[in-house]
Image (cartoon, rainbow, N blue to C red; front, top):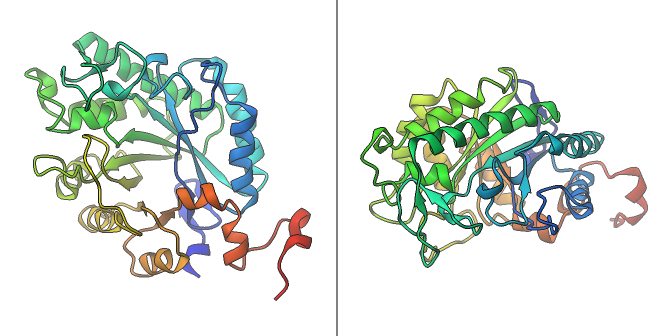
Length: 329
């Protein structure tokens, strides 16, 4: 089974091609941004269930850059010990771990919010347009977050350029109406990558999550993104393909609805990709891998519902502690 085959990229050696994508839990209830007992149980359960690659949910590079004040943070060295402890525990089950670093921009519920332009997301408050100095501070915050992620022992780092958050806002013609140097919509992303690479080791995977399609005729498309990725492909190793989130719009989602976007990105750039989107059936994931339309498959909501689906639906080895619970054929 291709899904259970190893995948190797730089120093990232995965035991299988199953990915738990970053999914915000909004569970730092004291608003400190720190991991809680819930987070530790949540991620460890999926590692016990055999997931090869876990990407820790969106962590704010600045306190006001979080999506909500109950999200995780990575803006201080104080966060390093807990992240390091979590990574160590996940490694015990053979799972590799990345962390997603993010700034929510105009989609932050922590006010006042900021954005490339003073254009609101839906009925959210109108954000403040960022000055060049403020942009530079955010870029530096991404670099500092990368340093902390490395010190915490993460195997890979994911820059969140998707779902209508700040990097996506700079990239999108729907949100960026600037008239200065940042009217070059790729510049913010390129400057963040440049800053991150000052601190993130060359032998570790640096990946980028993208909104390949914005569901608007004037928005980003996989072809536009592929052109951008070809400009920066020497600086990133892996592309995590998603869609939507930039504007409020109805999306016709169905099992595998985003797989075509990943296929386009992979074929036009030659970069390895993580693909997914309402994938519930292993057969669909397997077909995608066998047709070489993606390299890794993420299971989001399925892993929320069924943290042990790999144990129940494949022939992977069961943890010794749980073998007596295995159904006998």
